[in-house]
Image (tube, rainbow, N blue to C red; front, side, top):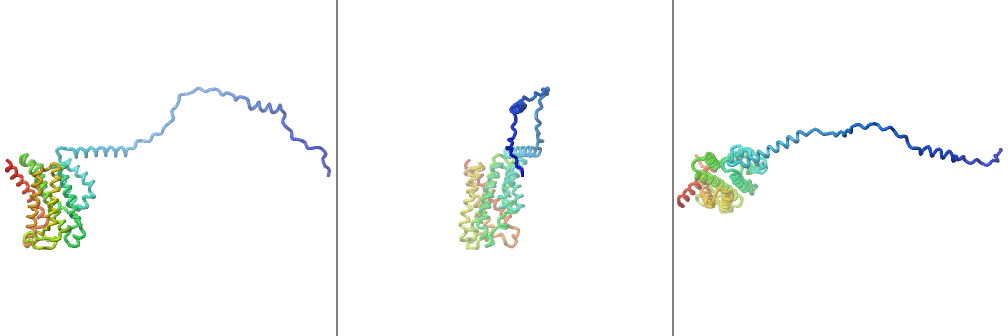
Length: 326
């Protein structure tokens, strides 16, 4: 095989002139483009979302509602409208607590009572009733299982129905109506307020003494003969229950004093009148209630008689004190 005797050829390198020509070609300045006339500057478009009508409407409605509630709470003297609106707001906000001590129909009856109270005595009167409700409900719920086992507990687990609400507030409602319609002179208006406070002191004392006696009374005595009888017997009293009832009336009378509904002497009158009324109620329970011919004398009827006695006694005692001082 024939071999080439010639040396291999080296790769051809570009000539210096060609390199210079290429370099000069790339270094040439770019051609200048003709300037076009500049038009007016256009602002960039910004997408604006449409107004949210629903939140604005809700905010406006909330503002109107706040204004209406403020007007209702601050109305002086209270009107029927301000009383209804204020109580509606309070009852809606406090419904979980209220329904723990009231049935649905009792809740409705309590709303009517609250509206009447606010119209007559303003928010201070309602605070007094609220204090009565809280203390009375707490005493009713105390040892409820033990009371149920003994068969002496309130029905519906201690939740009060409309009959109980109306029976407990009948005398107070009468005093409120007399105050609203300005029956009598200005001096009588003060007596109607006193009767209102005394009626709730009487009912709270009765409730607490009964419920504490059922829960903690070691020995219960029939008020007419002082014989020992089982717990829950109509007309029965106990030392523990009696002392608790006196304390409860003192507490509620003190609340009335702090709220400016009664003065010190009137508060003492409320406490004394409540204890006399409760003794009368126990006497009626022992002698007449559940007896033949007196089937109509139910607990609700006895409640009305009890608190009416307390309110009337307080008014008469205050009148006697005023006459004695003068």
